[in-house]
Amino acid sequence: MNRLGWRAWQQFTQAHVHLYRLSGGRLGGKFRGSPVLLLDHVGRKSGKRHTSPLIYVEVYAPYEDCQRKTERDIPVIVLERA
Image (cartoon, rainbow, N blue to C red; front, side, top):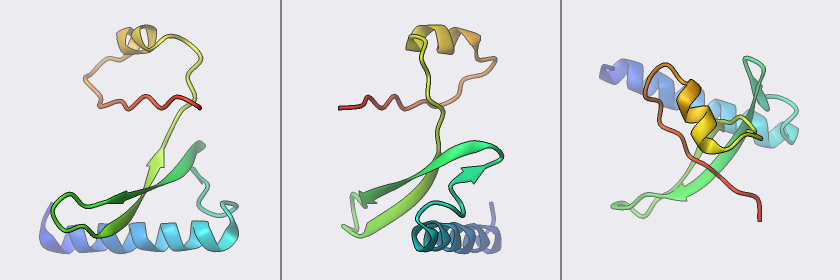
C-alpha cells in the first residue's frame, strides 16, 4: 500500500472509531454483517495510545475445528470471556 493509500486508510479508521464512539456502537458497530469491537492498545516503541476497529466472530466450536475448516492461513486471535 502506498503512502496515499495508507493515509486514506488511517483517516477512514479514525472516522469509523469516532462515529462508533459518538453513537454508542449503533453506527459502525457492524461491517458487512459482522460485529466490530474497538481495541485500545499502546504502541510498543512510541508508547502512544491507539484504537483499532476489529471484526470478530463468536465461535462456539473448539478452535481446532474452526482452523480445520479454513481454506487459507488466516491470523486468528482467540479471546475468552472472563
